[in-house]
Image (tube, rainbow, N blue to C red; front, side, top):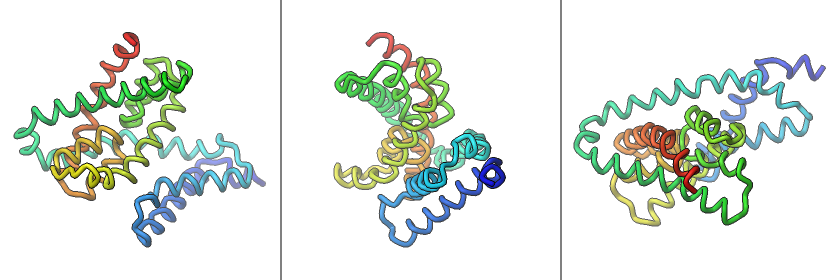
Length: 230
């Protein structure tokens, strides 16, 4: 009976969309950052699968189909970037320099904290691409010799954390520039954080989308060098 109900692609797709719908409704009702729709959806799916002892292989038949659309969805972030092309041309030096510094900081902070906590090499390497979008992060993880599944988990946690806490951090450090807000969110929490930046404004969303691209390219070239050197 379990195989009939859950061992198919429809199950993974349905439960993902249904859990996200519940998460979205809860967020819209209470408007609390901690009630991030993706975060709630993950918890609901985990509880459901654990309660009914459903193998992850069942979920992946549909989950992998949804995952296929991650890369095309990321490309769609070019739309807000195109709308703010004038802003990009006007502030390109600051944007590219900020993206480079942010990307290197993300990599070095992971390595430094990992060494401090005594995390094993393969696990540590899996966490290095945590701040870039999933399709690129998976490839970087493979290049470094990490475990892609752990990398995906790290990217997911990073994105949700950024989406939840970014507004508070911006207020705490009194960051008013729309460009700075977008770059900071995009570099630190990729596409999931960018959804929050888009809510803040078109400039924030465009800069965040741009930083995802730049951070991904920089990480592909810089991460292997930094890891080898350190």
